[in-house]
Length: 129
Image (tube, rainbow, N blue to C red; front, side):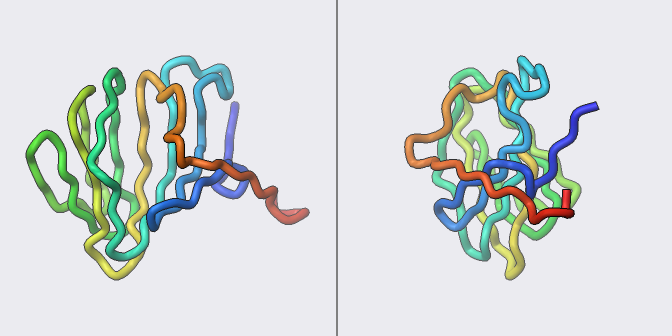
């Protein structure tokens, strides 16, 4: 069994969000999947973007947001899953007061993070693993 916690994951801070890379291509022997946990501050949103080859899902864990995908718009809340086909423009924005948290999975995994993505690693304090 392979496990990884948010505390053990590389993270990236940008545009009002913190992304935790829970599983990257090749990690644990994975070939076809990458998983990211994302937390967005109140009012923050990502720019519209698309992935040419990747299918992507967003699973909302906490908070409220608006998802734009393929010309459609829908409010999302905990328990909502959004499927985004390849080459579909999409973006999500936090519309609540509390942080918006979601899990994003891509298949095949995204080969490279965006140019402005600097991933850092901070080990958990001793005894908290």
